[in-house]
Length: 435
Image (tube, rainbow, N blue to C red; front, side):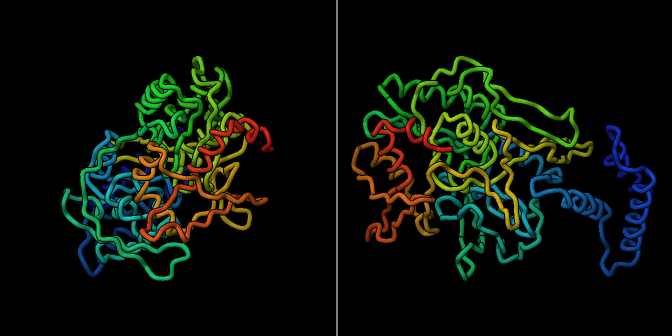
């Protein structure tokens, strides 16, 4: 195959669509250099290289200069993504992103091998089955971690405040995503845990809350901890259940003025008067942050937990002619107050949404909470859990659970305090006390 003829499709595909803002002359010169380099590699490199592989590598290189959430997906990766969106796939059950040369965990999916083993948000994957994962593409990492249910894969991670790498030997499984768990806690407090935002999430949350309100719920705790996000429309629909119609919930802004879009609530706000607390942590991202931030700005819910992940950008999937696809960031989110969600680095770093009441948990305790979450809920459901002592400070609520219990059982201090506030009837008072 003549490489120069092969690469004539590249400028057509990437630079001459939709009235590109790139200079045609400058772009052509750079493309010519790229083709020359690849021609040299093809003719002189020590090992023979497949032209299509080099082309795919070149495209990945272009996309990697953008941001951690944009991604070039080859045909199999695109197919896998569509299967995952449908709600079932085989693997270990984690959401990942590429950040600063590391494959970084956004959030483990509840009740999956990764979740049960104790893999945490912000863990950096440094090896997969002994293969170095530093600077590995997100697509290649997914290929190595996915596989037939029942097979094993070893994931090695580095973790903040932990000196040595941690090895996890995980058995792959069918990952079926059940997004809603609901129950009544302590007799009259509705509790719903949402694990991601899909096309059915809003209706599932509404139906579950309808049922609990009919059973006598007088308050609502919405658990978005470790929810990595999902569909934007689902987030807006959920906000609309609690806030009167025609209220600005979100604005998205892109590079061009005509890409600006405002999202308003709609419908009857069925649960407008129901006291509400939202629980979040560093695994709460994207659509979770939209709901949390909007409800905080609108003084509609008390936010409790830890700073959220900080994914405040919009991606769209653009299928390409050869069966591959481009996931491209096209806009950023802005909350009703105008503040952004996006994580920033440096001396003025911002990590997503800061809760009204913050909790400090050790890494060890976070792991225990992941593993024991369902057991903890059952105890609260039966009224067997006693709220731990919580000490208020000027900046946050500091929780010490180091002496949790000799059998390694742990109390969910965030949920316990949320229940305590809800039962006291002081949710609205605490919301109004926040600036």
